[in-house]
Length: 323
Image (cartoon, rainbow, N blue to C red; front, side):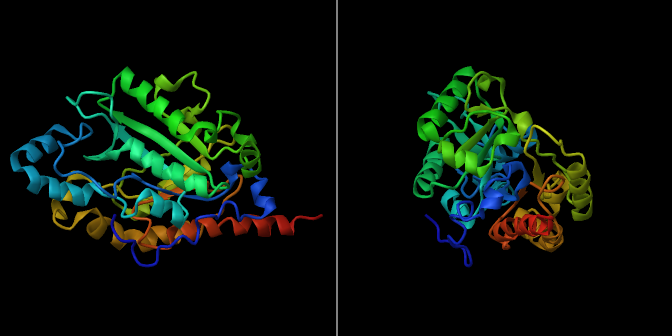
């Protein structure tokens, strides 16, 4: 296990359980919740084949140049430095999860993926479940939104795995507006799983993907990203869903070519973080405000703390209301 970066501790390991009663009674869709983008990419396997989520030309390059090409890919595939436990300790409560089977591998094993294969999904889920067992008032959103090389039996295997690992901690799909921390604590629910695939239809503890829209700006320019985030917040559904603001920049082939040896963090993320974080700090949660906000490399700034503190604005609003 790698060492924890400086400044990251478990100061927010129990932030949900520490919220004032006024906030725990509010719908979760109105609270500010920190999340991570491509949450599992703190480790990828350079010795495994290139993932089926990659374009043909990337697979060709990786075949031609083998480990050298994959080491370059690592720099552009990794979007987080922290393990699940470290992210949870730091206050992250939403996880963006992309998964895949390994083509040609016998059995139904599922792995996290982003260009290259990561850890087995089961290992990550067990790490999250272990944290939740120690922090009974904390709640996580697990958003399974991309699937690769998976047949029907792989989905059955993954859905069964989720039920086996989390058991009674899984929240039943219900009206979003009814989901408050008070409600979840009363029911002893700690996990809300979103499963963006028809295989999960009819499984009560699997929430459909349309209940957690996450509009994607797909830009390398921070100004365009912020314009997109503002527009999609204004268009946010008033009823029936949570909302994810993806405060992330996405490299193009051109970007990767120009910054080939630097990687995502050095070439694109670090230089633009101040602009993105200024936008985050200026947000308000609530009926027309932000809900879940995701970031790359959540350890590079005080990201989780900044997002969590936005909830204080809801208290000041309530205090101004006439009694």
